[in-house]
Amino acid sequence: MKRKVLFICNHNAGRSQMAQGLLNHYSGDKYEAFSAGLNPTESVNPHTIEVLKEIGIDISGKTPLHVSEYRDVKFDEIVIACDYDPDNHELPATERITEKKFPDPYLFSGSDEDILKSFREVRDEIMEWTDKEFTGDNEMNNKNSDNGNANNNIYKSNFPDDNECRPVTVTVFVSGDPSGPPLRCPDTGRSLSEVIKDTDIIMKKQGFVIRYEERPESENTTESLLLIGGRPIEDLVPLPDPSKYCGMACADCGGKPAGTTCSRIYEYIPESVLRLAVKKAADSMD
Image (tube, rainbow, N blue to C red):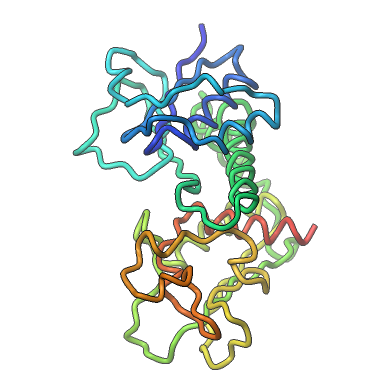
């Protein structure tokens, strides 16, 4: 019997539709995937349809659904790909809930081609995760096996030593004011250094070690306050559009005042986007 999996995101127009299409396409013999939204839109984002069609998956007939549509269905697993408040949202019955956040396409900005490129990157990240989560030999699957603890130890022992990994440095330029608040990811509230520590564990599987450093703004020779592998994060991933969260007048310029750096544009980078930027910086070194 196929295992039922429900993917949930905010609008059911991007991430959850991608995950449903990918799992049904590649593992439809073992899983039956569904998707829903906490606040669904009227239609699926056309970029979602396009990037799936590029790899042979047609979801053009799909319509966003509210999670309440599945209130009478029992799922083996529910995957929540967005911010979620259990006090405000009632989920269907399930044996297991997994929270796995992916970059929110709604926040992408730039030209149509830039946005489409970002949708492809989210698609590929979801594809990689669903493959490892549901079909691959990974930590999550090992945790669910009969010998979970033993397999987890084997899995972790396969990490290369730091001296065998290639370094990727994450540099944050900070002001001289020690009382200034650290940059935090808004989806979890965790500081940048905490997120980088977790990302280091993930990237070790790919042979990279992540180094985090804070340097004074006076040493900055770029227009970016956040460098990954020596590259501005803006060159690696589209940053969220400040006009959607920033109350400052400078948001009218797209978040980057001419000739200046502004920490405001880094205040709404979710963990998933930050991890994606680190991965892209590492991939560019291959």
